[in-house]
Image (cartoon, rainbow, N blue to C red; front, side, top):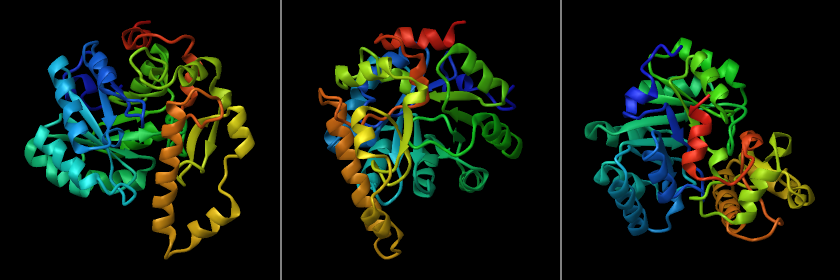
Amino acid sequence: MAKHKLLTEILGIEHPIIMAPMFLVSNAKMLIAAGNNGITGAVPALNYRTDEEFRAAIKEIRANTKGPIGINLIVNKSNPKMPQQLKTCVEMEVDYIITSLGSPRSVIAACKPKGIKVFCDVVDLKFAKKVEELGADAVIAVNKEAGGHAGPMPREELIPLLVENFDIPVISAGGVGSYEDLQRILDLGACGASIGSIFIASDESDVSQEYKQACVDYGKEDIVMSTKISGTPCTVINTPYVEKIGTKQNWFERMLSKNKRLKKWVKMFTFVRGMKAIEKAAFSATYKTVWCAGPTIEYVKAIRPVKEIIKSITEP
């Protein structure tokens, strides 16, 4: 079992679950439903176009649930909005921040004095050690079965490795879609789980009916890795459209990505272009789109309220 306090104690929730932040999927309604049904949810700051919309969403969530509020920040140079997003999180006193794709140094420095917890996405021991030294409150172990930007290691290997080598809690991300899965990662030593893909097909989600239905119709064998979205391998549903366009960068994209002087700018361009493609896909009524999801859509058999999805993970 976990050698640290469970996520229930860390965040004051009933079940050790974070509804994972999902780009253009997570919204205020989903976080409210999460907070009112014993878990907590996090939303990417990038889901809001303006700071005013971002602040309004935090206020809406806080007004409708007593559960803790989490925000996901992309902390590398592909996100020029990060400084303002961080400032807003600190001013609004959110409960915790999840950092992704970069160093959390500035986030930890800004949040520590305010008592805001910082959980950092990691995929290996090396980066996990760095964030622990910086003062992270927990690491989120992104394993091979995670949706979106998955890690290279299976959960059975990654979780024990981090638990054995760290004095801070380990939250598992990837591969949890049932009660049995949740118990398995807790037995491996994780303090809780970050769970995303099974919530895409929820009543509270604002993505298209076609995107939700795809999560019902497809399964884990239909999930493939694509570098066309953000330049970094990302899990997507292998629809006929994805089969047609392929999952690897073309020769020109690869050439630019290898150029040291251009790499940073190319990655930013690829990220922005890819995010726009996902945005179009998420709300478009056609299968000729690119839909992000993880292998746990195997457990999605119907479009249901968040409350029912939570029950399916927390009750045997």
